Image (cartoon, rainbow, N blue to C red; front, side, top):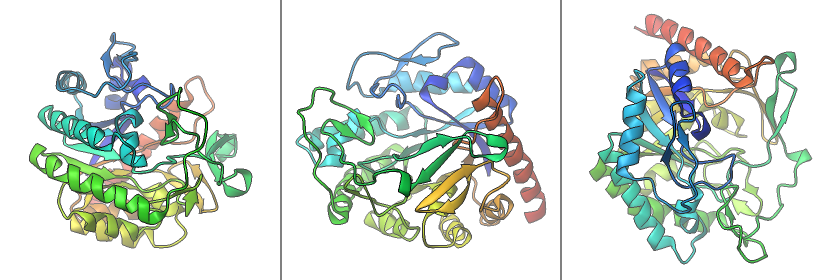
Length: 358
């Protein structure tokens, strides 16, 4: 079991690579999607402080030369690039929406996976969802009034439709005609996932890459008229059964699983770590379950991190554990302080787990 760090696109720079290493990380999981800008499907090298910056070449797929350069940059700071997390919506919106460009976009994803494999990056995380992560609010409700993410179904209209030109809670076509995306049933969504996996898993196998599926967050039954895929723990079984392969794996998010209305997190971790289906782990803590829950500091909440990590260690999990996000600390660097706290806690807990399990 290895300690990793998660870095978003706007944080991929020299200072944050050093920050991750200083906190004890040996591996990083990077996001190349511009979540905050809304549209940025391309990858471009910037200077040492700005890192991998924004370009305007809309629809550009990530290519081998750029991915290799990013891996080498990560390695120059004493880190290993473990995974790319999430495809850009502009790369696969019609795969999600079953649109006219689905075949073309599947071919594009295959090319990306081949290049990721050639670049020496072993994992691609993804979230097969039309509505994406939506409905959260940030409020000063954490310990000591820390800014924390909260989901409360009573305070958000879960049925609010998705406008055309949007998928995965991001706009891929600002010039799309007016109107709304029609509702998508659970059967339709699973049929689309089946096509995705049947097309991509063989390519991932050939490329030495594992595709790792993130569960739904929020794990409600439907969101904005769209069915959810893995909103209960046992639905991971169904996903794995679509194509049985080491390249069809799980991006195991403890917080998302804990938020679900059924199931036992520790039994679930035990099952999938024994079977070797977990590619990497998101370690964050929460209180509550749907329809209302919130993120909390890693040392509090409903998840006993020592117990969860002990199960992973006992079952021989040798992948990466990252704190994906955390409440912000009231200081001049809220995100950095929050992540430093989470990393320190995780590092100490992992070292204790390894001593006691061994």
